[in-house]
Image (cartoon, rainbow, N blue to C red; front, side):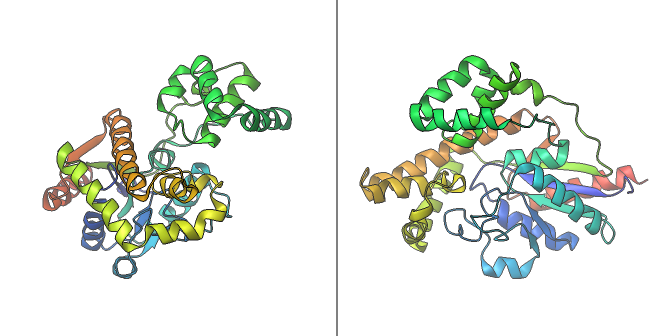
Length: 306
């Protein structure tokens, strides 16, 4: 594949304004959008994930929006594999491809490759599954902090699957999970331009709060009610749904659940920005700087093809 081929990656914290800008960028270059969002891929999760609307989906072709059911297995490794296949196809017709979203691990998988993590044996898997049920997530998180403090710092501590997997590797190999996540970056047969979107913190937080209010008006509670029987699924252990489930359980009032969604979403946005700031290849823009972003992409392409 020619090095002239360019993958445009547009990322940024939740609610920053990626969707609208990416539609404009995709239309400008006449290309589809490869959606790098680990929750929007599920067709049942529309309101709570702020998935592109039906109208937006008609404007530009999207990959990985509502393409799976909650019962389907999926992973960052599968996303890497399938996205590389899509890119090979798209680059036959276009010099550019666009991948956009806020799922850090999905973007990293495509840009840098997935680490070759050892396969967990059945005994270790069953042991940790039993310990999670008996001891609870908090105890396993505390153990992970001791065995692999570096992974502890970045892992979603409310996500049992990721906490357990980190512990599985630590206990099975006697090494930290982090030690298996530091392989050299895989070389890709295309150029990558990374665009980061950000706003002033107060502006971003106001957008987050407003978007949560919009989700409630659009029927987030009703969507959560329909998903309540499946609440134990990992895909539903995410901001928006878990707070609604707590309300349905009678743990919180509806008002408190909504406020918790806002607070947890703001916290997630900070976590995303912490992750992104480690990547020196990202060039940062305000979402309103569409012309500057298009110019940056075009100039980068021209300079490499003089």
